[in-house]
Image (cartoon, rainbow, N blue to C red; front, side, top):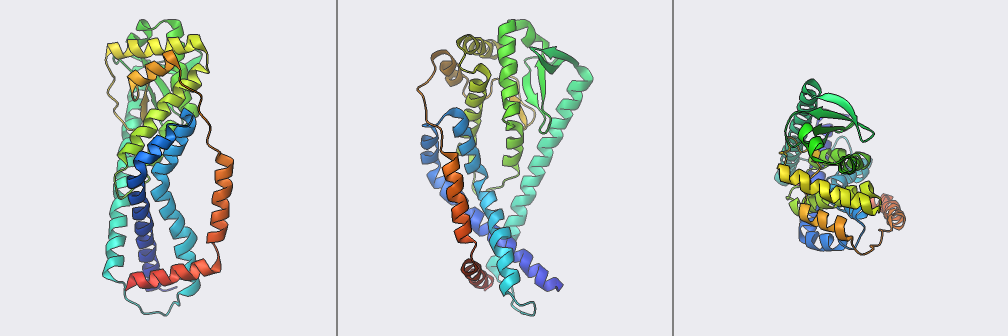
Length: 310
């Protein structure tokens, strides 16, 4: 396999990612309002999963198109001796993809570094204690109630918060943060940073953060009325201390998104909502993938790539 053959394959792959990811980004931007309204009819945890899947969809579809369609069709149909020249559109799309991925990796790297520094400084200056049955770092930094770290997240609490809240409220706050850990929300934040989109999807990201907080509230209180009241009171008391400024996108704070709406849900509840039929959707996606990955599809993709290079 010659260097020119591999280089052309790399350009094809990058251009394919650009085309698919850009198209998906445009479609999501146009349908973002509908998607958020659709999520409102779901349970909070289901809505969070749905919106997270939408946010990473452009990158995920682009990667699937490259490894599932572009590379196999190129290796199957493209003769190694072909002497075609790459077109300007293909080169420009390849450069745009490289720039986009570089920015995403650098953003994720900076976020990981900030998260690591926060954990290191908290471990150095803080004290490991068992709070409400969970290990936590207790620090002197004011107004801190966060879950930091990605793969092994750590609960960080400040002394003023522990002194302000009652034992029941502390337990509710700890259960909320551990709910984020169970849902791997900090890891999902990293995945969002590493899933570049050619158009900003800020509305979907904001909606995901909102429903992730609602889902953590629901999991923490487990439909227990005293726990709901305790968590609502904890949110209000911590908010009165002043919001802690997050130093990393990979840190989840107790206050999170839409404090007023969260307190209202905890105090008054909300109507029952229907779960999304994930099994049916997964079967439909598997069937669509099986239909898509046919020899005729690879031939069609190769013809499209031939058009692209000219």
